[in-house]
Image 1 (spheres, helix red, strand yellow):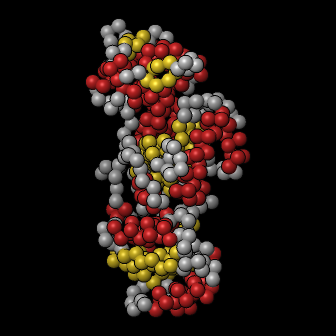
Image 2: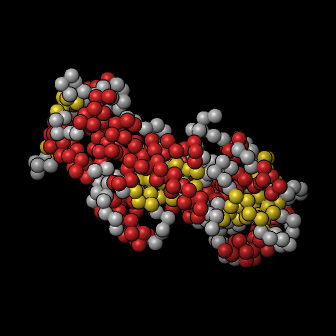
Image 3: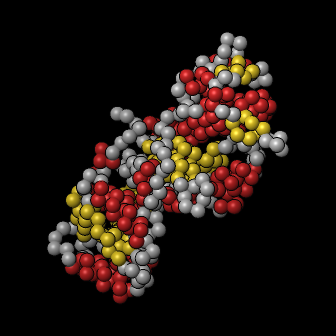
Length: 430
């Protein structure tokens, strides 16, 4: 069975069957992901989801309604607005009571993961008073469990295993009303050459040697120079495809890696027209940018793919570009994958400069938490040698779940990622 695409229905979810209901009330908060997960796990086929929302969460509720209604027509989602009364006990109880009064038959459930505390308290009180046999539940984000609350017995905890509900990355963006500007890449480009570059960058003196060649030889041939002496735009396509760039300043292993990709002439010069002939990049300029540092994203993606099968990773991608109004470039996840509905976001940079490393990680941190909630995990892969970088970042975010993989980790990333996942699994068992 292919590990790249799975449907949730193919996985073992029998332990949830006893707690599935025909009518599921969901309290909509700022992050609709927990509501989506609850609906998928606790609502019977053909059931109705009641999306109890406020004015502030109306857009999230509407998006969730469309998503649930569109998924194989398995569910019907109904909007239940509280308007501006998210803290008004009388209004909340009246709304829930009225909706319950319309139900003639079927099992009823209330999942109170989202919404305000007042919504949770008064929805629970009303539902319990009118339907004491209802299934009351919430998602424990730290443990990744569905918790079933009963008045006469201990809380029942149902573990959401990685195979229980694999959520596609595109679904996470869709839940938040974000549209990708293009499809993310599923396969790494030039993985062998990327591996050779990672091995080179593990040693600072070798990385410096690469940058010296790239800036003073490659860019001299391929880029235009500004009046202030810095490099400007790339030269035109016709000029680039004629270039034969000398490689004498590069280590032999990198020259051999270029040769293995059929990028070299007989006298070991880099032939940029070969990139176009092999149809690896739509434009030669994109290959030039790849050499400038984008290769690291492909290398990281390849390491994720390498460990995917053994770690129940079914959805991954690279280069998630999301336009945002009010910003010039929007924001981007370099590499990301989901494990169950937990988002793992990885920011990549070949720089060793502390400010750039921090800014890359902080952007990924803010966006990943926005989309994946408390369950999200974020990492930075960089070429810093600074042992204090991680400590400073952790102090700034007050989040010890962030990982920083530095230069010495580059050639062991697949093992490091596996340990990262194992550590996350241990977190949820505490």
